[in-house]
Length: 116
Image (cartoon, rainbow, N blue to C red; front, side, top):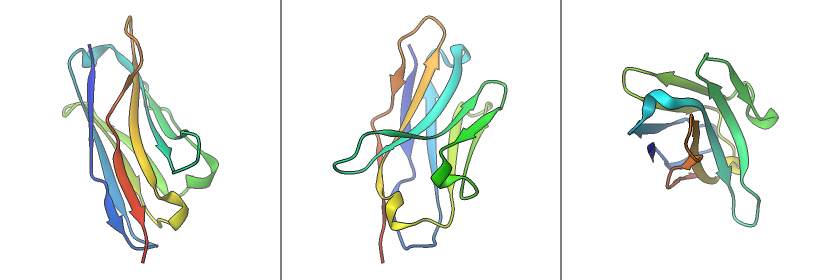
């Protein structure tokens, strides 16, 4: 079974940057899809960015050009580089993965707050 742990959240001013990390453990070789979701208070959880095993990446429209998802297979870690942050990016960010022959896995979440 895969286990995910996020880190890197925090408080940042508008226009600033943060890098979130999602470290996987367990059956990591079976992971074929990893995504970052976020959920702001009162809102539904939404997918922000995703990356396939092939390296293909996809982004939600509001973060295109500002966020970058990447993967370091040597470290079994997926990153979300967030630049030009806005107040509307404030949310709890969750890592999510799909792995062969396993139920989808969620991390515990990390808080990102964009405020002056």
